[in-house]
Length: 267
Figure (cartoon, one colour):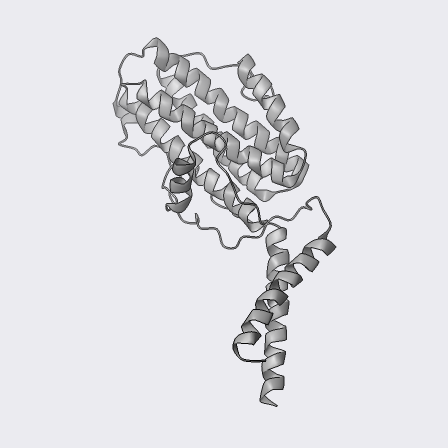
């Protein structure tokens, strides 16, 4: 009798593990680890409002490039959200809008002229970014996994570019905003990789050194602008591939684990 109840318990455990595998296939990694973190890039006493210094040509070019690079992220994510239904793209697109607003606040502060295409999704003044947008949307439209990898690629690229622009500016207000944007990009990278891992995909760095990406992924979410609250939300759309094969694979892995477990008890 004891063995029968023990066996029934293990069967229930097997079913639970199988359902857990299906949940991972649907991109449901669990609670949002970013909930409750700060969103504001600028505090009332920040250097953004109290600091002023003349801009170099490199600093001007950096601001005008970054506002469109953040727009590129926003536009790609909006487009891929429509393609995939993945909530993570919608949430992070909203965060990228806040990134754009932060850079725009500096552009306005220094009386620069922002690109006049910022409100047009998929249209860029910078030809390089226009071509990149077209390429990324095409690549990300192939599958859900490709879409998530495109998201991670964009965030890695943002981090690399922000590191470069930070090293080329002496203005404390620009450094403050760029540093906060980089913290947000690191959080977004974690979110995309978490979605990929929930689908059984091991992520490999695409732009940054693998060691740097590993360090970002293993560290705690940063408190910065655009942390992406809710970016770990569940996926309600459909992915490519059959759910039948996914359930079968999940059941097989769970059964293999159970057989090993039962062997320990001589059952």
